[in-house]
Every structure is written in C-alpha cells, then in structure tokens.
Image 1 (spheres, one colour):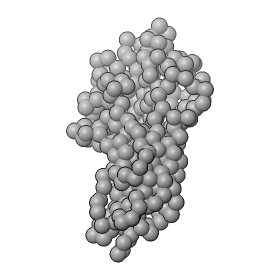
Image 2 (cartoon, one colour):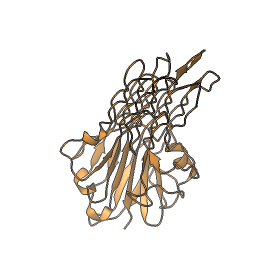
Image 3 (cartoon, rainbow, N blue to C red):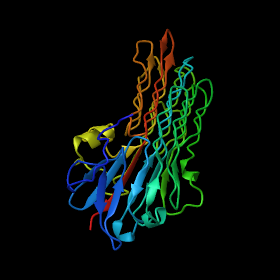
Image 4 (tube, one colour):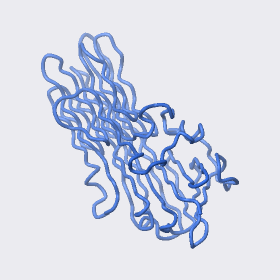
Length: 328
C-alpha cells in the first residue's frame, strides 16, 4: 500500500503539504485531525486528510455544522476470478460511502482517537477487504468488492464481481450496508453476467456508478464524486496526494472511485476496466494478462482467459479514506 508522508508534527501552514494535522474552525475552537498515516492538504477555504493505510485518526473535538465535514470511504476492489478455464469475471469495485456535510455532526460527537481500517485489494480469486471507521457515534463500513467468477457466478460484495462465462454476476451489497444510518450516500452495482457461445467471455465487475444486467465484458464505472460535492477532489492537490490516489489529475477517471475490472476474453478483446481505476481484462490467445485495480481507488482486478494458453487475472486495488472540512 502507499505510505506517503508518515508524520505527526502539527501542520505549520494551511496551504500545501507538511505534517500530519489539518485545522478548521468552529464555535468550539479549531478542529484538528491528526494521524501517523495522514496526508494533509489545505487551500484557502478547506482542509483535507487523506489516508491509504490502516492507522488510527484523532479528532480534537466533536464535529459541528459550521465545520461542514464530508467523508469518503472506499473498500478494496475484488480480485479477478482465479480459474482461467474459458474466461473469468472481473473483480467488483469497492463499495463507496459518502457522508455529506449535513451528516458530519452526527458521526463524531466528541474528541477522541478512532481506528481507521483501509481495505486492501483482494488477491486473485478473493473479495476485497472493507474500509471502516469505528469508535465514534456512528461507525461506517465500505465493503470490499466481490471477486470475479471462477467456475461460477461472481461473488457479492460492495460491488459485485463479474460472472465467469455463462454465469451470472454477483450482487452489489453496499446500498444495504450500514443499516439504520440515514442521510449518507452508498454506492455499489451488480456484476455483469459472463457471455455464452461463441466467445465465452467473462463478465465485467460491477462499479459504484452502476452495473448488472446482460452480458458485458467491460468493467463498470466508479462513482463520480464531483456531482456529490464539487471541489472535494481537485486537480490542485499536491503530487504526493495525487500519487496516493493512484490516477493522475488529467485522467478522465480522476474524480471516480470504486470501478469494476473487465472480464477475460477469448479471441476478441481485450476489454477495459471501468472508469476510475478498474483493471483491464486478459485476452487469450495473444495476450495481454489482466491488470490490477488501481490502489487508492478500490478498483476491481481484471479477469483472466484461457484458449490456447493461460492469461492470468489480476488483484484488486486498495481503497481509501478521505475527509474534508471547512476552515473558519
């Protein structure tokens, strides 16, 4: 996993990088967020804390309405299917949870240190791991993506894995996660079904932007965060922050998270992963192999293929935890 800027010294300036704390204001005084694995950034109006490693995070006080706290959790992407007989499904993207600023004061109601678990991408043939924040008033979980089908349907997960050829996709279960918690946005699409004769392709993994339905080999797109919160993801981030999120700022999927991996293909293809970090599917004969989901995005891994040889599938990408709040 990425591990940029491992610091705990206070942030000395509110612009750019430096240190492991960001500050905002409110009637209770400045809000400070610290942690060993935080990548901080501030501009003239907001502060961010980015985390792609599992480490505790400390809040100096409760969240207030004036802080306008927003939180993004992305689970690890599912791995592509492991059995390459025919063609396997792409891994589902990690489930996505977005907490809008109207909900922030209910999430953290007092000062304290809280465990943050950032879900790792699933190895080939395995689901991704969950991303969680706990120890606060309302615990939240973004589910890992389902693995691609390997001799069967795709697994359920945050976003469902694509099915092996002639098999259905897995269910995206993130929308029903965190029961009883209202006012949050949750995203996780179903995996695509695998194809039948003559191509026998694997199905693409579901993405947080949608999925499911008839056979489709390409991975499904992740969810675009910009319509939910303009400026939450910005090209002004410094290079270490951009690197930790896995895609350059000029990539069309820069503001997308939780994309599905493409299924493996026989004779035609290869097919592309979903926008926002999904891995590409393998093709056999002739290659290439499947490619991994993007770390920091929760992308699903590409599926594998077998015709005259073997072209392996790939693992899913790690998830992330991002929090933004308003400066006074």
